[in-house]
Image 1 (cartoon, rainbow, N blue to C red):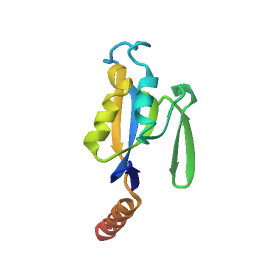
Image 2 (image 1 turned 90 degrees about the vertical axis):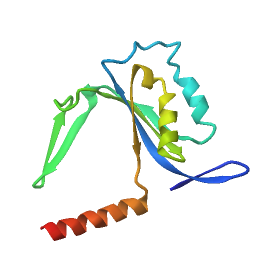
Image 3 (image 1 turned 30 degrees about the vertical axis):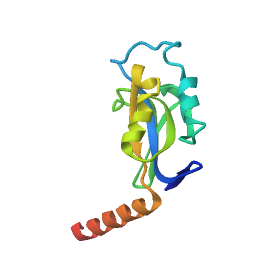
Image 4 (image 1 turned 45 degrees about the vertical axis):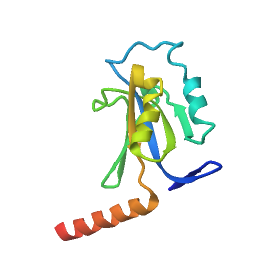
Length: 140
């Protein structure tokens, strides 16, 4: 878990991954209305945004799988993807509702889609892994 602080309080925050996708039902992109610099100016100075970047096109992507020790690499796009990922940001927020609000202000929310994904903290992730291993041992 990351700590967000200001001069008077210290509030624990969670991390969230914002994934940006294209959307066939999105409004047309407008350079005037969809200025990413405005969103960055509202998130970077406060330490909300940890890192983010635009992604290259589908033509540059690869799908990697490993089954029975055999690695398979497939050129994208793959049939399962109807939309494409345009970029991502890793943000700090005190809760999911705040992360959703931050994502709603991103220009992509208007002309694409923003998927807000809570990240598991290391402690939570290890607990889930232990539960999964235990459940498989019982079922197996």
